[in-house]
Image 1 (tube, one colour):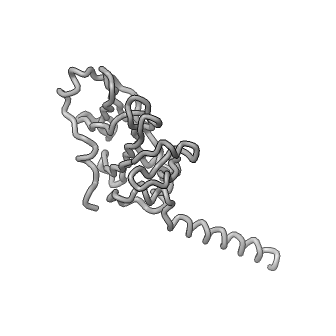
Image 2 (cartoon, one colour):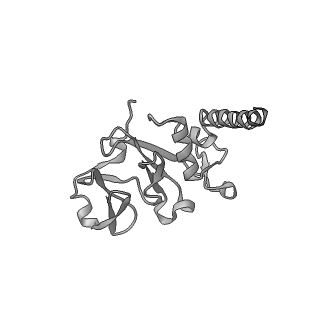
Image 3 (tube, helix red, strand yellow):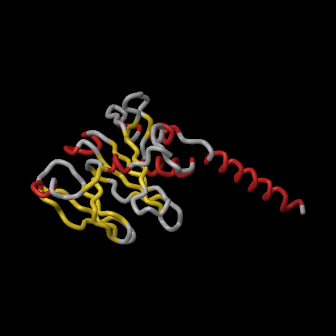
Length: 190
């Protein structure tokens, strides 16, 4: 009996410690989700913040940096919680960056979707503006139009596992598309 008691106590202590860590927002998650109205749990917010890899810049207006070595290039981030496929699980868009993180575009976009295992996975993660959501739908998710500098813009389509390149739209056809901004779809009253 004694030989099982010590490992059991150690396991119990580590489980309690893990649970306490997931009940507190990390510094980056706290800053990231400060103004977002979302139903995500503390653990889910921490998971997304960890996957983004941001660190605190120590600045109020530009609170993030890509890593500890790039704090001289701080930036802001905006979180857009949405429910694009109307399944009750939020998809989280994060629009962030500057020319250091994102080149000529000046910003990057990430979109986290919860997979079957219950883990949020980044489906975008590249330079671009916050996307427009198109009226066309594939496998339950709308197509996304990513704006930015240039003469052609990618349209991404959900293939059942991730968003992938579907086609490009010329600058002339951009304004003709029926689209809605992610900002206007963001969940704001929860």
